[in-house]
Length: 244
Image (cartoon, rainbow, N blue to C red; front, side, top):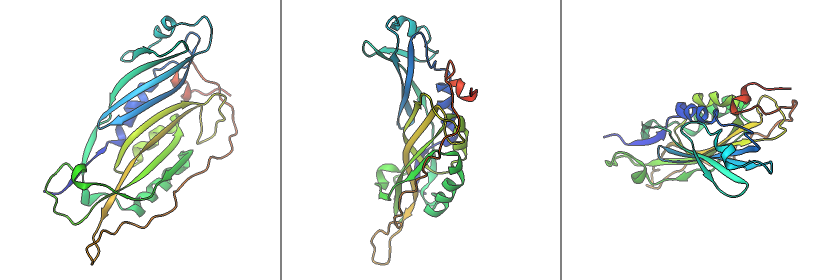
């Protein structure tokens, strides 16, 4: 049986972003600071962190703005969170069909005009037997993983559906940038994704040792100078309706 590896379905990231859009940004004397999402298998645990800004604000007022399917958790006098568990489905991909490093870099390069920053880490061997869905290990190599980090404006997040790379996401966060400058790559709502890109096979050479793809310096796109101011709206959907 061909070896299979489980990777996340990048097209389903939009379900996570859609869940964020219902969150209020500045409800009843509180402000949204960030949304932290940690991925474990197909489960995504999200925490939306709110900071109390006005002395007369209380938890009752904040909870009254909580969207459906989120749960309220008080943390301290001035901090509270909305919490929710979401699904990020995985799909099986044949190890032999994993994309090569060079072709994967080209895909990232072609999408990078929409990114504020992107970086690719050094190659690391992974334990094939613990990562594969099939136990019949018949090939002479194992996948290699490279850590990928992407930062982009939430309004550009649809471009991730074109990211045809076998990814295992680990962390997906939203940050609220007060007084942000707006340009093609930036907004006042910024998404940061971190995970492992599974890259091809590390084939054996003639001596029988594993040959790992040559390392390259991390590919990082520096942030351009901003050119426009943005004012937050009443909720995260405001990212799509900017005000000069």
